Length: 154
Image (cartoon, rainbow, N blue to C red):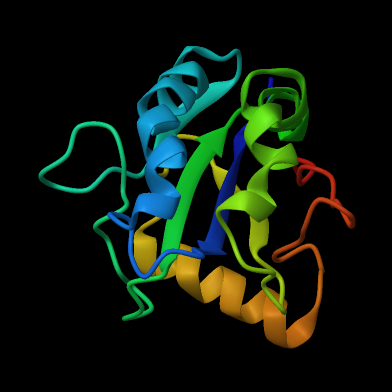
């Protein structure tokens, strides 16, 4: 039995001036469906939501930039996260991301292992992404191209 879960953060810089920009409408209109799908996916554990809104975190602004949206979630393992990302309706949004999001110059997704039962804070997630951007992937924090296995119990 595993004693760890996978935490992940991803951020994106919108083409719109903010989430209410008309260019973002189709993305926004599908957010609830995509998030509900995540929650119903095998291996899903938790995701960040803001205080006022039951289904997304778009009002949270850790970068003080109205164009950056963040997503933080926890999964049982890398496989279940990847299945959700690439093998469900979510993949449609990945394929079309250029319609809504600017090219982001540095790492925009970070993953790290956390003890089962822990939930990452937004601040911790932002720090992990920052660390990955500065130091590259390691067993501390990594990305989809450079995955590190779940820690082995001593």
